[in-house]
Length: 436
Image (cartoon, rainbow, N blue to C red; front, side, top):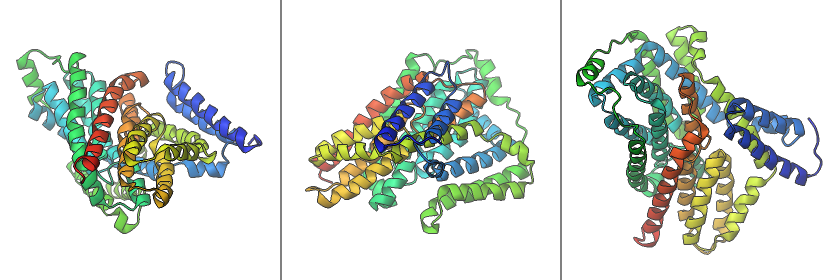
């Protein structure tokens, strides 16, 4: 590990490393995002921007454990044939209509993401969607992106739906019902408008055009789905999955992180199922996990050198009243969350708001909700803006449908801009017009 000397040098090197890593991720024709993130993260350690111990602390272990645990549980369910059954059932219910498939999956994903974490929901939904669209000769990627966008919108509604909300609830002292009352109604309206936006975009691009025109051929595809499954393994997988979800709801009472619960229940399932561990673990998205590992360290460099703290205090210094706070903090949080992982920024900004509340001449509660809306909805801006995006991209790439960085940006940017404007507009209306 090299020593760079002064804190100022480390400060600027951390920024250069982040910009360089992000540039490599964008230039995906020349660099794969996984080695790019790992190189950036380990270079930060090598140059002394962060110590090995600080790098380890920068990794969000709760997120990593959650991903590994849920990937193992989903892997067992795939092995049992559960997703094949769901795909065949969904195909029959929608009768192969692309618009019905889109609306069914995005709505279901948004609802599930509000009561599970959105990473779990994406892990659950994407394999089904890929199977369905492939059978109908549709392009899976636009549908996967739509589901990811819906998961990030839906996850904004509750305390447990998205990691930034968990941080805000913990530091700000807000309850599950506080999120339901203040954010859920806003997100219902935002989801409707967001769904209309990406449906319109897919419509004009021709992604909702049926590829199988012959009704008889389509009917045969819908009705002739033969599914092989292992009912015993499926029952075990579903029981463990159900218990895991119940424990997620109780994790605050149990004082256990969601990641600890997921990884523990995954180990229980592997012991109970008695399946070949190597076969189960082969389906875990290790490339996605390595990407997160590298990115967490790069972002940890920004956090440890004080970049996030300076940015957060700069924003707090500009805010002179709650209306201005909503207009500044919400969009800024959305932009930052689209570029870097929203967890460290949300944490830094939450502590600033906590201190700011002690001296502010106005009620800062609206600023907490503006931060939540911006941080969660801003995750739809780029493919690395939220954990669910990266996980979905990994699943799609494994099945042979890579999602390009700029393809995601082209789909995510209009949805992000419109949903952030709508959500923050409704928040402003709630507090300063309706007075509730």
